Image: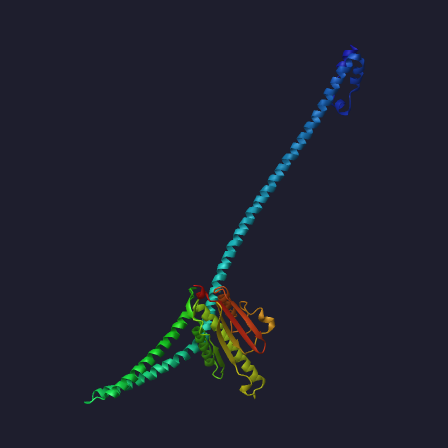
Length: 379
């Protein structure tokens, strides 16, 4: 019975947790030799049970950690998704704002270009009036002469004996007058057409153009426009046009605008220097300084070169690099927009694949050099 009692002695949880029960050890030795396998089996079963419990606990803890990690990752993904959505919304809003800003800038640029064009046309108003006035006076005078000749002719034809020689002379004079009226009338029409052409928005279409005639036209208009505002101003104008240039493909409205801007600047520079000389020594004679503007054209291989030179105030080295920047100007407020040279540079370099260069010495001279490829030669 002692064997059985020892054999069935219960082993509690605490016995397993803190070691093997003394009852179990006592029973183990009282079984004798047969007790060894049984005891070992029971011991191993107990140890296996403990290991399983520990592993189960560890697995449960691992599973919990895994679930927490998954939840954390999901939370991160959700936060990231929300952030991406917010960023995409912000990018979309910024893009829309940028497109709106670009359109506003384009609109403003167009308005500024139109404003600059109107400003340059304003400079020409007096010059146009002067250029029209001269041929208009010729038309008026020759018309009056023609009326007198017609009256003489009627009187001669009403006589019983008509002097045919005299009639032929009168008819010859009348024909010459009509030819001169026609010539000067066409001159007026040409000036008006040119100004309307200049005022219109450029189509960007290149057409065969006589550059010599174009630059000469704007040279005269610019000079007379300046003299209309300041009748005391006089300048020497020198033209050196290469007759072999012929016509070349350019956008005449745009090239005319370039000529006008550069020539206006040239006359402005010589006028300013003349004023400076006079203010420095009011008693000095005008012979000490003669305002001079020289315009030349030349064909060099397949390139047409136009030079506009003045002996005015010159440009300081410190600002030469800025001279073609938009809105940069050395003129007083109200005298310039700062867009003329910038637009001219874009017209030549971007619109005609040419170049616009500057050579200047402060206090002595300035020369702008326009180079335009003559594509007519390759056609």
